[in-house]
Length: 311
Image (cartoon, rainbow, N blue to C red):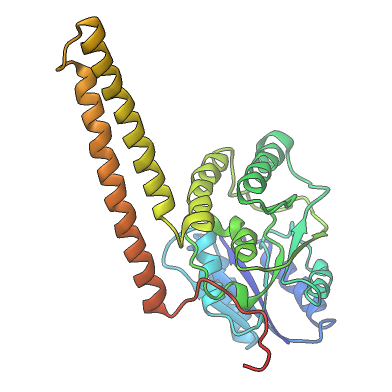
């Protein structure tokens, strides 16, 4: 087994050396060819120089440095794209994730494809960290259908085959288990140790719940309708056409039985609804063409084969 441990970093200069010491201790207990990939997300403190020193002293430690701060999702994406392992561990650099939990996560990959960390006993402030996180976990579980207690826990183990074809943007790293489940991945949860932050400042705030809601709309569309966008646009077109027809029916009845006017504001409301119906239908057909071009040009398949017999 080849293992890649990917760690996004942003202004964590005081936590890096203790983290590496803990990682090195754990790596000695893992029977795998292991690389550690630090992704410096445009740090402005001494993080970059410390990571360069790590990489210079140990060839199994890799460094990717961004020219500015792009966000945790982009850092994770860069780490995955440049990893050589067939198994991926993601974790934070703030020492709140415990490297000693890595072997327990890896053990679950014998029977599952994703092992998701669950910070059951979190050491964070309730109103600013735990409450928004619990709300986000409920919303994500409800809309994606993948029930997890802790989507926000970065500490997770993945079989790389389920991450290779995923393109993530925005703040969508927290949805990786849902993306994997969409591909048929088997997912389990592992209770992990969570430690209080000792140094540095948290990069998260209450505003993240709004980002989660917006990203969730995108993820719901991608998971449910990526290969069939006509269902969304075509459904909207049908609803808009029916509403327009109801408006015109009302106008006709009002004219015939109540001496109403033909050219009232309702006449133009119905016309707009019918124009919207045509527009949505055309957008749906265009989206279907674009989806097919996307998958065919990249050689992607909308299905995964578990096994073949006599083929």
